[in-house]
Image (tube, rainbow, N blue to C red; front, side, top):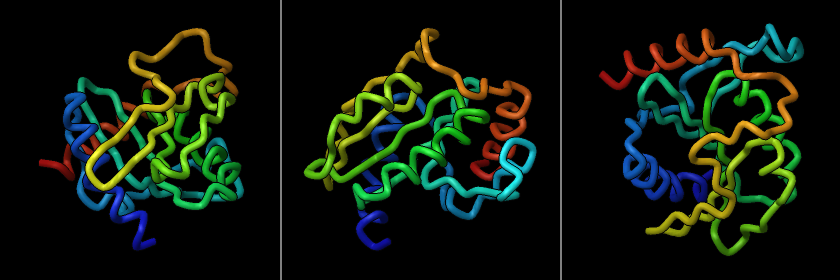
Length: 150
């Protein structure tokens, strides 16, 4: 967990450079997913940015062995966020080609730099959508984050 915290600041700066407002303490923000994933009622993001009524979620992971677990979380995020990324420490970052197919970006993060290994800006329309983005739910999520930021 401590190493994941070190990655927060560079990710925050990167999102801000893309024009996003970044929510503080995003991991404390519960997001209801019971309607699409009945095993869990809520999930908590690692990093959230918002702009122009769109949401960007970044899941931060340091252990490559957890790629399937974090991909599963990202597939849930894709139902409530326009942009979804997985972030790994740069030295551990492999180009998982399947992520692009599902519209999940990949960030390689060092202590003062973020490399967009798999780019998803702007959102591509030729994706394999397992569960499409719910724009109404994203708007509710956006408004929740906007209240926290302001």
